[in-house]
Length: 298
Ligand code: KPL
Image 1 (cartoon, rainbow, N blue to C red):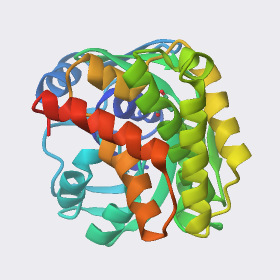
Image 2: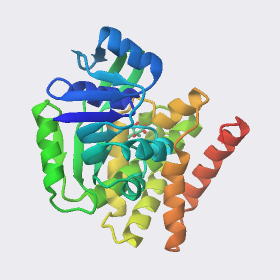
Image 3: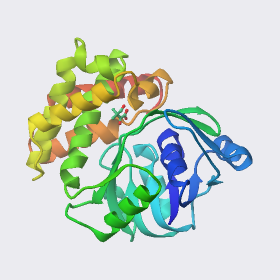
């Protein structure tokens, strides 16, 4: 299968590198990382040890492939969609944080699939990413049910030895992932704690309450996600990734813009449309935005 990975950050490079063991992969990313991959190949270390030589480009326009994986930061989704709209793909699948798929659907003719990836990845240096946790990829039709495209993508991932689940309940899983991000990312960034202590320490109830609010918003949108399932998902991911920093903590620690709009903004917007009260997500979002504004990042 020909796969274009749009967004060769840590996760995109890791998933793209794993797929390159079996498939014809093109990574689209930033200059120094792409140049290094062209010169010396891509190295994955940490919990996996892989060396591959995918194609590495800085311009992702006018490409043709069976599948485009979108792995950019959520705030770059519109730019990714504009670039992908100049090419041709059988399917486009987002592995991003936030509910970005609707933006891709609005911009593209291709079938848009929903996906999540629970691999831990850290950018080590140009040409090298570290796998900090072997997880799985979940892929499925955006509105749920069985889809031929999702099955095809799942089979291709499996063929490359990437543990993959083809799920029929993607609407629930998307909100469950949003609950995990809402429960861990903001609290860990504000408290400057790794994922494990975020759900153990004094801020523990903040993360659990944020997850319950996401579940409430999901149910108001007709998606079946119970409070207990949302909280259990946050607890499971915090335990599985206990020693890792969330992406939002990394962003804050490195003075970078965060995915606050794609996570807390998405929850608050949907809550307002359906008259649901989400004070915890609203407060976390405001605090992170305040930090960004003070740093001139928004
Ligand atoms: O997706 C994540 C992130 O950091 O953005 C979690 C699941 C919280 C893992 O750290």
